Length: 107
Ligand code: SF4
Image (cartoon, rainbow, N blue to C red; front, side):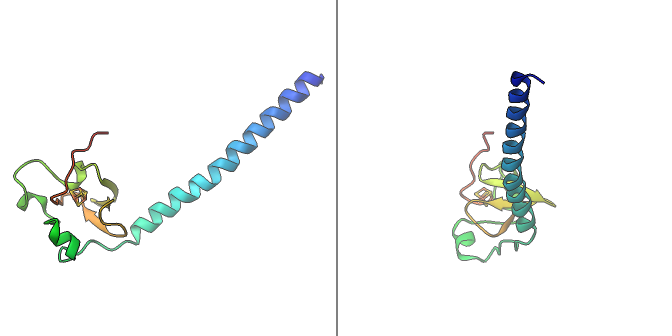
């Protein structure tokens, strides 16, 4: 094996090691985030902030327009039609829910 081939092989090995080292914490964050979301309680409609924003699990009763948590910029679905909202950390909101802070999803 030539010096150049050895050097190339060593570089590939180092790159793969760095990629693997970066992938492990990312996977832990993603798995931790998902399992954490499953453990979250659903937002209580009588929560003070929920009431102040007129949040409802059933957005069809709150707004006539096609505005739901599922198409809101602040929503991230977890599973089963529920998801997280940046306004209610640690709680799940309904995908079919709505509140007065609704913002059109842009991406
Ligand atoms: Fe739902 Fe958006 Fe209101 Fe959060 S900000 S509760 S995702 S409508």
